[in-house]
Image 1 (cartoon, rainbow, N blue to C red):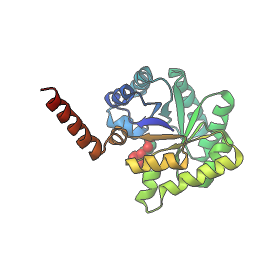
Image 2 (tube, helix red, strand yellow; image 1 turned 90 degrees about the vertical axis):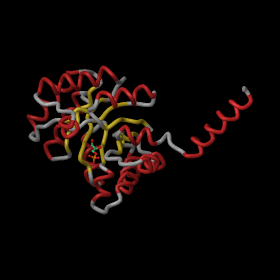
Image 3 (cartoon, protein in one colour; image 1 turned 45 degrees about the vertical axis):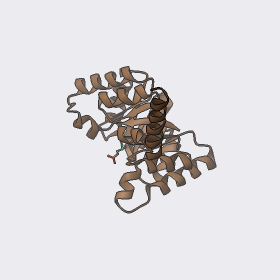
Image 4 (cartoon, rainbow, N blue to C red; image 1 turned 180 degrees about the vertical axis):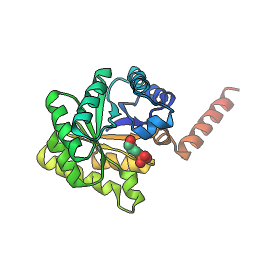
Length: 218
Ligand code: G3P
């Protein structure tokens, strides 16, 4: 399973990249706003800065919601760097735009996906990635992981090449369950990636190894 980090914070992206396990980055307009990035030129420069840190797969989201606007904005985003994946919302004009980008060889990430029906549409339009939001489904008392399993099953039935990119991951169990189900990618905050390191028996075991080594070498 590939690991993407879900942030626009350059420090966090560097930290995850330095760990050696990062395969990409996802951003969205809220994450860009959180970093205080505004204005088209600043936004483009920030995406370029992200591309300069990682090896590939930087999702940059369009703001336009009409077909012509999505196409224009998506093409501009794609020009920033070959690593850019144009992130398009799951709306009618978004699906049309994904189909167009797919025929033009521009990679896409279909975002704001909350149902299997939406997942089928995105795959048929030729999306490179599909982003079902697990945590936000959990928030409304629907099991987000059930959707990941359902989409995995459907995509495998038909050999759809769209990669399942589990998003809105809130904790390590989400990530581990996604790996069990067979999601192609999980995008999550830095904290979730770092939390994978933690186990109390690792900490106590290391403490004892170091203490024993010290005693033996006094
Ligand atoms: O980037 C999309 C998604 O991962 C957002 O997650 O935590 O805002 O629901 P969250």
